[in-house]
Amino acid sequence: MPYARRLFLFLCPLLAAAAAGCAADRPSQPEGWDSAVALRPALDRDARPEVVEVDVTARVEEVEIVPGKRTPTWTYGGGLPGPLIRARVGDRVIVNFRNELPAPTTVHWHGIRLLAEMDGAPGHSQPETPPGGSFTYDFVVPDAGLYWYHPHVDSAVQAGNGLYGPLLVEDPGEPAGLGDELVLVLSDISLNDDGTLGDPQAGGNLGTLFGREGDLLLVNGRVNPVIEARAGLRQRWRIVNAAKTRYYQLMMADHRFTRIGGDGGLLERPVVTDRILLTPGERADVLIVPRGAPGSTLPVRWVPYDRGYGATFGRPEVEAFRLRLADEAAAEDAPLPDVGRDIPALDTAAATRVDLKLTQQEIPGGVEMGINGVPSWEAEPLVAAVGETSVWTVENTMEFDHPFHLHGFFFQVLGADGAPVRPMEWKDTVNVPVDGGARFVVRYDNRPGMWMFHCHILDHADAGMMGMLHVIP
Image (cartoon, rainbow, N blue to C red; front, top):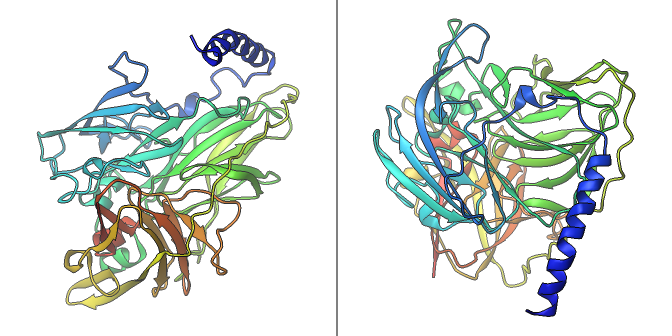
């Protein structure tokens, strides 16, 4: 047996024991602290440690979103949101999917660098899965971070009706002691007075133009849930914005967040900020140390974000969820361990250019959106080669911000000087502001195929603001 292997086997139990001792000495959160937002875990059917195999069925299920009322919600596995799938870096994930909805659908694995045939893009990676049909998704998860899954058929309607769920890829090598972990799926939903789902076409053309936001804010499918906390004890929130239109800007009075990660895992270094801003599709990995008097309640507020065209006019702040501090003395948490990673900048010297404009036009009876003036159903795909590096410039010609998402590949956002925005991170979704643009650099690794790119305000994508990238061998 090689020396390094023998040394590892000798040290591993000692390190595990030391870590367990540290965990035992650390103060704990109140009993049942996370019960109000606990997610259903996906059941792993495969005993092999490197394989996660789960069954996921899309079906309509009556869910109690508003107390005392049952809502016929479109669900993955009967609950809102779908079950939390957990895997580790390098694991093979197998999802046996069955469609029991009254409409065809697919499942897109947002952010995962998988093979194109598993991406859930109908007509490109796979056919639509019809009612009563099934499809097996089989892919490897190469990167740590929080990802999520949602449909890509009639996306605004199906996701708006409740079809979304989280997928967390863990890195066994990351530092211990970052905080007590919560996965938080932020979304919203529109309900009628009797609890039934709202009209997905509400507002007509104006609704499409603005993007339809739900009336109720949801955190893991609950309205304004309460998370128990111990003052002074760090929590780690792994957050995804699964709303089809709503920008989530979260703030806590007299508190600051430490953001350690985003779409593609850890940042190169942490950032301290007074707010969390997530466009639809984005993720954040943040640390928070709650402070306050024993027994007090700390609101976490949704604060309107000005994404253009009067998006904040007359809109009040809303409690998204609350922290309730235990009626006991504040704890003394261990210092935050070093967290971050080296992210090499992609070389743009020989990069090809991709120039896009996000556009709209009036057509008889409706609004048509597009890219470079062409709706998705008329557009020719962009073409790139495996190994190629491209700099994308996405210009916004509309009166709204747009979250721009590229399937299948991470990119690095560039500043006006052409250098990567610091601290560096891997992204798959970036905001394109009003009267501005976004630039990013991407390298196409060896995963040829057809890949979508689109605005992640799903009403906009469905109205034509979408295109395809053909990566050829």
